[in-house]
Image (tube, rainbow over all chains, first blue to last red; front, top):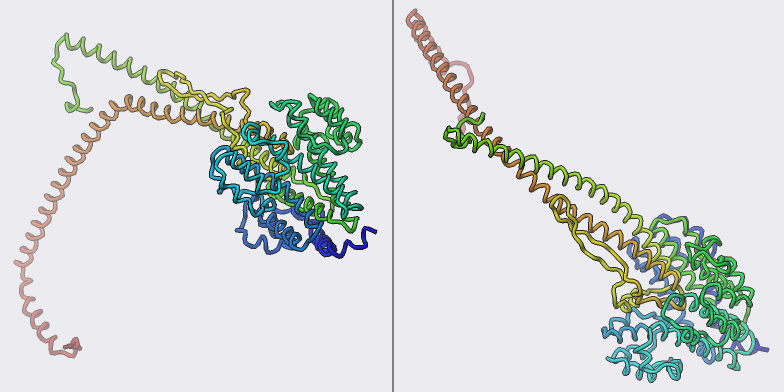
Length: 363
Length: 251
């Protein structure tokens, strides 16, 4: 039944995204890219997929400029989708931008705390996290003003309210603020896809799975990255999203973990994560904290495996129909593609070809 | 060799002989000391040059690894963390201490790097993702900066040492240079003297030759060559009206 009326409002957007998906780089493209000798060659190889967007680049552009142009294409395509969508699909797409908004707001908070001219920061903001009232935040000169204008002007107000006060912005490390916001965002998003009547059906199934994975990944990463820092266990626990495959027992064990083995134990209930930890050899005491150089599994780190998993999930989203979740999947795939190309061109630019195959391609 | 030009004005007495002898001894000791110092410094410089070479090669490698680890970070984080890192850094973790080293009387500055433990301003950066890469990148760059400090220390020492060696060698050489100067001057004088003499000789020869030629002409004129002269004048006059073409006169 879910397919009966979906196409009335969401059909066009879904069709467009499926078209976009076909322009994603394939394994063949990647193997061509890895053969390149210069960035110019890379640019040439990207020609069919990126076309005009790369035309303005100077000869032998920097990798960051290249990545910037690729992101521009993603942004313009996404904006087109936003412009074409209505109703619950539009709301869904809006949710996708909140993650970037959190990053932008965190940037502005950092700037305001250090009394920098925040107007200069606007151009550093991620274009996907741009909203009309973002420049208004630059008017704030101290953190309290900023806090108030964030509450009034931004869609992120619910994420601030209740968990962060303006003193918190001043005192807490910006990373804690960012992760608190992100946690609230994920929970809200999860709640949104779970409860919205339009999304009962494929969207709810797909997005629940993906968001649960995302929540678990964040919890695991935060735990691993917090070892050896001043982040206390209570504070750490507050940053875990309160849903996901690990919640609640796994999260509790994560919050008590003191080393990598503790984390491995905490996630062992979920077979996917257990196999990741086994693959990078972290569960047996671990030679260092994984990492792209260290892990024995073909140089794959835990993060690589997570990315790999995410990409596979995103790929499978396209087997479903009548859902805006394909937009989410397409965005994730596109971002991974940009990261891949950046990695490859970085390897070429720095003449370090041994590790050039360390990207994730699922098509 | 230098003749009387550079000689010390010494009055030839026994007392001044003793004085001169002690002076000479002092000069010799000083010279050999300077020589030894210069040798020690040169050796030190050679050592430093070798180490600079090593450090530079090492720096090339380390910098490459460091730049690559930054690429890893940008891959893992998927964005720019530069601003956040810049802003959250408040205290230096990596510090440099300067001290002095004494190499045969020359004070060479030496930079020593050390890390202030416990200062880790951006430990939480990339908490959500990429934190491990960021920390590893930081360590790699700390090693790169360590190499840079080492190189800076060596190069500063090299510059100072180079200057000092020049000064030491100059002190040693100055006297020799003076000697050379005097010798050169003497040589020039000698050369110009010789040249003058040569020119004078050549002049005299030419003069003699001219005189001889004049004398011969006079002798020939006397022996009846004079008769040919009118004939020649006549043929010259006939030529003007002859069949030869004249040069065109152009107005």
